[in-house]
Image (cartoon, rainbow, N blue to C red; front, top):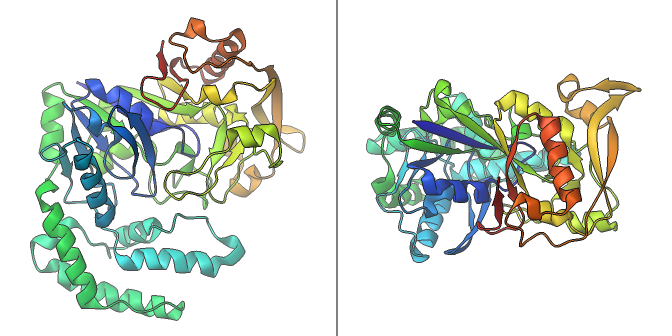
Length: 421
């Protein structure tokens, strides 16, 4: 039995979708265990280009079964759109995709409240995706959530009535318009009717898979430093993002996780508010323009910065990373010199990531090491030896700092543009 967790070692957007897509060819099950449709994973393969938010990115491997665990919160409209998109592209998911009935459902009031809360915070806004993720997780832990299991009886309508009484008062108080019970009830009854064929209790399936030596590929949403506890709180997501979340979110005991692949971008990006110590603030610089990206979920321009080895080293220790998949190395081609953050200082004293909070991290002084870049186009490289000498040194520098090997290197966005070492 093999259980491989694929996590992002930074603030998300590291390229986990691509990694899961090419690792899935040897997996019996690919699973999402946390988060919701606030995480967008981009996959480019022979079927086309896809931006996926809920369905596991490994679903394209035809011998694989996709699982969406109870730790994932679900916007049913988004899930139905993805199922339809995949089926139209020739990736039939019927009988190959199962959703836990324990999953909590994003309701219309969650999305409305997400936006109203952000507006009410003004300059102190967290920078959420406004997809209702925070409010639905808040309802989950405050016993106000609605799950797929509630639809099997009249419990759904009972719980919805109670929640609308509570939520409409808050919505109206914050300047919004109250929701109507019948409208929400009928809409979500319709979603359930379409998604019911995909809803299945996953516990016995997962446990049987462990007993019969199946291979599981676990796909994290978000990134390590968006974790509720270990991330840059309050500029984080609403769920646990480290591999141990697979136990609560899918039913796999932590002791069965054999490998943790840390997907690491060759530079650093972040979407929304929160500290980014190595951020390149000069928006007219060549580096800023070269690193510039657009987020798959929100369409927002990502903030960009130099590679930060301090957070990579912390992610290795926190999540038990056993190997690294380095992505987007090709984006660095053409830069004469590269800056790499090798540590932080506060008032001249060296500090680690865990020694400062989010507000302190925003004020640390980065200690940079300047390393030579390369001009060559590396997108056609098929082996480590084909990379320019300076690109090889860059990879080895990351290995030395992290203490774990770089097993894969992304030299382009497509599945086959990956060097396996």
